[in-house]
Image (tube, rainbow, N blue to C red; front, side):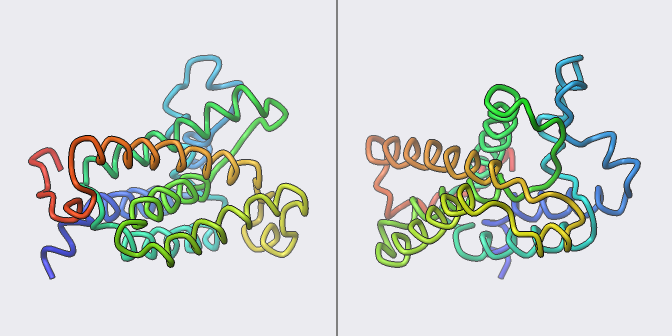
Length: 206
C-alpha cells in the first residue's frame, strides 16, 4: 500500500495544492489565473498557477477525478521527479501557446489541458507493457481533441463549469504530452530498458 502511495506522491501533491486553492475561493483564483496582460506585465507565476485554479466546484471535481484516474493508471511508470517535470513542461507549453498562438484568449483557468498532456505521456510510456490498451487510449484521446477543434466546445459542459470550455488548450495539452512522452521514450531506449521504468526507486528530492 505504501509503495503505491509513494510511487504516486507527485499526483497527491498536485491534488492537495489544487484542493487548497479551490478552498481559497474566487478572490485567490483571480490572483492566480492565467491572464495574458498581467503575465506580460511581469506576473509570470500565472503561467503555472493558472492551471491549478478552477472556475467552480464542478470544474475542480471533474479535474480532480481525472487526475486520480491518471495516477492510478500510469503513476508508477515514472519517478515522482519525472512526473513533476512532465506537469511543469505541459503547463508551460500550454501557457506559452496561449501567449504566442492564441492572443485572442485573454484569460484561462483549469488543470484539464495539463491532464490531457499527462495522459498522453502515460499512454506512450505504457506502450511497452500494454500496447493495445495504450494505442486505443492514444487514438481516443487524440481523436476527441481533434474533433473538439471542429465541433467546438460543449455547451452543456460550459454551463456545468460556469465557463467556456477552452478546447484549444486541450490541443496544446496533447501536443505537449506527445513532445515530452516521445522524448522520454527515446531517452529511455538510450539509457534504460523501458520495462524497468516502474522499478526506478523514488529520489530523495520527492
